[in-house]
Length: 113
Length: 112
Image (cartoon, rainbow over all chains, first blue to last red; front, side):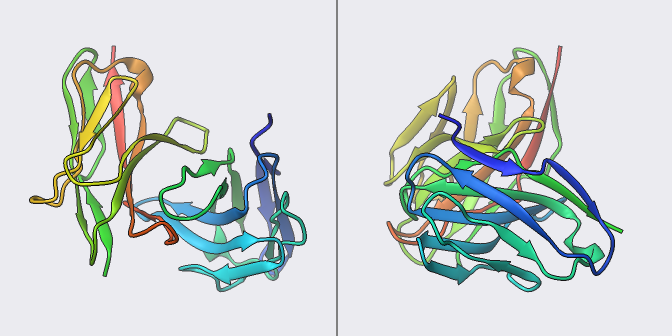
């Protein structure tokens, strides 16, 4: 099994550009989420989804959009990139919230200049 | 609110030393507690967990005991290896349907 895959691994954007970070899982997990990791800040939840067609905001949703048209895919869209969005982005999936183990992808390192 | 506090890093130890990484929590109910580990260049992976007071989670020589009286879940290992160098995250969740809350992480360096 591939588990959770993310593309691209690295990306450089100019301020104002848009892009989509891809996330896919092959474990038939209902719950998927996006985090950003910044030095000294730990992991902060951006958006999450409890199943296809259902998404909700996390702790830091501004500047990001998500959709969940299938169980497998959960893309994260940056509509107009800003330097404050320079970070490492992780996608995760699990059977559900709470006590279920979260499975993380390898991350996307994004730099906005 | 609910939160997790970990000791500041980085922590630097020599190989075969004893490791403790402190974690304390604040929660309005009875949380489940976790330790996740992030090896260089990778995503996080679950190391161990405990779902009720006095439970001990263990994996790969690491242990942590859920102490309700001190609201703590300290991570320990008797003899660390260079391959244990990573960032360790303590985390909690309040119930089966709640989001997981992560601490800020503690970076561990093991010297050969």
